[in-house]
Length: 167
Image 1 (cartoon, helix red, strand yellow):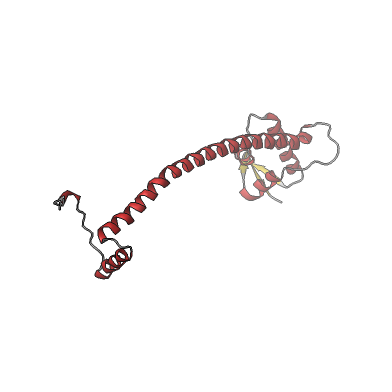
Image 2 (cartoon, rainbow, N blue to C red):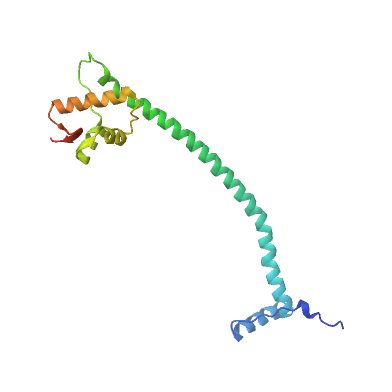
């Protein structure tokens, strides 16, 4: 009989005697020693995890690619949405830019909401709240004409370069 190699020993400290007895019963049921039973059980778990690791890595890579594709798609859609919103702003501002317009024109609902909610609002705050770039002269002129109309009907008042809702 060969002499056991002490470098190959591993000791298991069970949480209780009942736990060790349970493992011994399971090993006996499997017709093997406790040592071989523990090795088989641990090897089974380790082998399963080693098999799963490459699959998980492939799944992770696939999910990363999917996220990248979805982000690019979302970015394209956000750009398209911004363009549509800018076009809608220009479309709604068009009647306010015509000097010989006849009929009724709709006020920008966001303009009225900002004026009612914020108290005194200066030009820069107003354009920021409406999401209007000050370099877009048509849109800024349309807002200014709407402000003139609101002021003419007595809904707002200009005080120290800020408009205040008074109605």
